[in-house]
Image 1 (cartoon, rainbow over the protein chains, first blue to last red):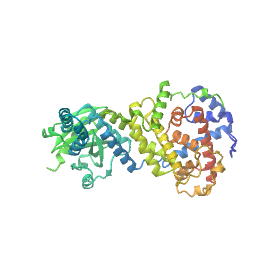
Image 2 (image 1 turned 120 degrees about the vertical axis):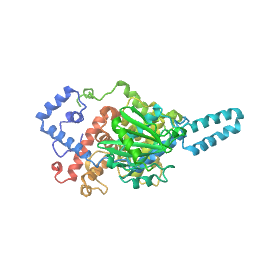
Image 3 (image 1 turned 180 degrees about the vertical axis):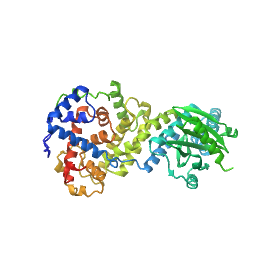
Image 4 (image 1 turned 135 degrees about the vertical axis):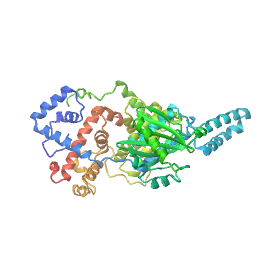
Length: 278
Length: 224
């Protein structure tokens, strides 16, 4: 405490209490002590003002660093790699044929060492895992809610921010192995905000982002499994306060999720279906 | 020093349990090959990780950036930290998700700096590593004068530059308190020091910052 301070410093014994007071870390009795003291001690009152001024400066808008978008992407990609490498069976189809090949490749040493019967059993189990289409189980819904929440909290709503469907649709080309239909619903009160890639149930999916007043609607799209031929089966669910709607159309599975009420989300879904190129 | 015991963080203590859990979490971040490394999370666990931890990516980057003062290294540190967090997520409980992730970021930064010290080609940063005297004048020696800090285009840039000038232990507590809004108890967990040390560092950090700031701005405290 030997540092000279230009202005008259606070009483040494009080300095840390003043900090605790500023940070709301004191109990009621000490809050009263501090308030009584600064009422009669201009030096400590001044010190408290300077501390508050430091807070004001340090919390200026552009002082806090924000994660660059590239970092966000590489973290999500690294997590995806980590997850596909872990031994936990995926919730649904991994990335299609490549997933199957990867599985077979990892099985090869085992096939060479093991007798044929157990290996076939393992292979059959693996195939079963591979061909199972995504099921609307509770953990898939959890995944979707997490994807939605993540998009809102991590300031990662869109990778391509555009209200123009002709900008958003080509953006997906080359990034994923299917082409999600992108329609503009601004006229219906659901303006397009953009698109991004997300990671749901073990695979990379397209996410379309729409807005409705203050609300955000995420539409997750990926190729449907074998039960997709049952066209347009509407399912509405609620999960942790979010509404989820699931339907399939032209070989793609859609999940719309929002904090909108079911009626409005349903309205969105009908508008979306209607606007699809026929 | 009016007894430290007097400074009871009333609202912030979550539970006595938290303390030991936090230490466990921090230790996991430290050991790269924690036993949990091979334990993959199931889909629900992975979704929970995404919902609890990923929203704090900005906070993680902010801390890594202020600790390392190097934009590229900060990205590497955060990426490393998120993966370590993912691998030991099965053991996460108690501490707030943000504080838990930040504890791991801090450990990853320590690892990064150790590695960099061993690499001879990298020039050491001017000062601020370890305990340096928190005398304002001694911090403004090499190149950066109050006037050159003033030349920063915006007030926010000047604040950033000034923060980077603080000795690391002081910079760390100030960032964790003002930018990450952690409680004293959480800062103590993240930085691995007693709450009393957090308080004395924070009070030194604020005093030093105010002192340096009043030297960089001609009218000092009068700046609106």
